[in-house]
Structures are given as C-alpha cells and as structure tokens.
Image (tube, rainbow, N blue to C red; front, side):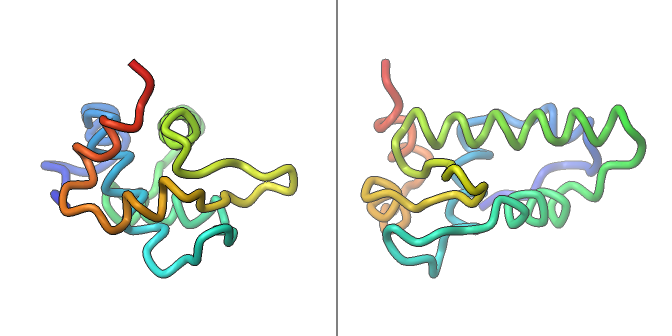
Length: 113
C-alpha cells in the first residue's frame, strides 16, 4: 500500500480512485469475516490516518464525496455492499480480493467494463 505524497483533501482528490479503493478496502476489511459488517466510519478513519482530517465544511464534504465514490466502486465490483442500517457488508468477491496478491488488479478485473 502506498501512502500519498502530501496530506489533506487536495492530496486525497489527486489519488486515482481504483488503487485508493483497493488499498482502503484491504485495510478496512482485513479480519472481517465473510457476510460480516464493517462500520462505514472505519473508512473515514483510514482516510483520515492517511491524508489527515478534513478541516472546514468544503474539505469535509469533498472528503465524504471521495468516501462515497469508493463505496460505489466496491458495490460495482460486488466486493462490499451498504446495508439498510448503515454498515458495509463483506461479500464473497471481497473475501477473494482480500486474498489476492495484487488487490488493485483484482478490483479492476471485478469492475464491469
């Protein structure tokens, strides 16, 4: 997993979404069992660890937009899904991605063309 060169929302927005989604998925879902829930705030915490906490309303909303985009990527790849109550659910393809030697390539392969 590579760290961003720089911090803050500007650095987060410069990241390519697929590698970011793959590396965040692996970090957030490692140790979560198949069909088990993971709190969505764990995604926020991981991105804040890597890029710093967003400061100000505009930064917060930009940060949250990236989080939502990653969740949509995960849902398109069928590796995780939002549940009606809010948490994210680890799906079978997600468990396979966690075991992949190259999660970025695995995620790209799972996305619809």
